[in-house]
Image (cartoon, rainbow, N blue to C red; front, top):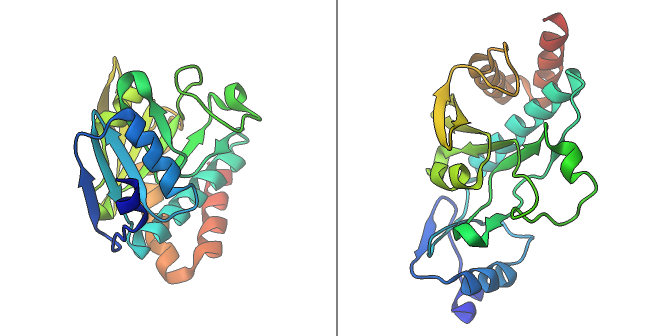
Length: 211
């Protein structure tokens, strides 16, 4: 399997599904694929998905991630952004790589750590997924206990908050209470395509300061 995967080429926007993959095989596949790659993975009870994002997916991911960072900085909230880190839990037979993720409330718990183990470390407080390629796996994030999942679909932001072990869609973020982010984030993302990234970041910061 590893020899085949080392030769695997997944076209942008496409995915490969592998079934009956053991945890040991999953670990070996992650090692074989390496950390510096363009593909994303999702593992759920023996089913492994390997997906290559489209260029516009990566562009939106970067802009949205930067908007969240600017928002946290302006609110003077300490955070740690870990990008597409692989999160996995062997006991649950689940693993996922978000498009972007943030430790916010639990930032101090993982501060300075180079390796995270979800059997002892908390999951990220916020995970972001860009659904241009329809690869979001809410059930995996739900099982791993990620408190908040943002999904961007067709220009809209859907905020999912973990309540009693299940995601419930919400109009407001629990991490940013009182802020109309379902309206604001998509608007600035759309504006970035016409006025540019820096102008949008400046506009967002001015908006926060005016609140």
